[in-house]
Image (cartoon, rainbow, N blue to C red):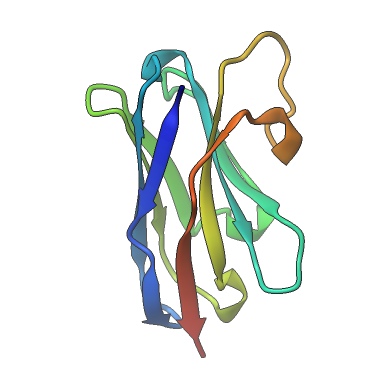
Amino acid sequence: QVQLVESGGGFVQAGDSLKLSCLSSGGTFTRLSLAWFRQAPGKEREYVAAISRNGASTYNTDAVKGRFTISRDNARNTMSLQMNTLLPEDTAVYYCAALYPKGPTRVTVPDEYDYWGHGTRVTVSS
């Protein structure tokens, strides 16, 4: 059973940076496709970024392109999300998600993912 634990959230000012981390255990990390999602108060969970098993391919939603960078360290079973130039609209609980791909995957769809962390809260003040 894969377990995911996020860390690194906090309260920051607009324009600041934060780095989120997701530590995985209990599975075969190198076989997992990973992603970050977020959920703002009163809104549905939305896709932020995804990364392939070897880290060679990354995908960002348009709202964070040029500001957020997803990465992974397969030697340390961790995934990160470097968030720069944060905006108040980035305020949300950020979740790490994982799946073992069995074929073509809709990386932006939460229901595709089998494993989730409990989330880490990011609050950006204007």
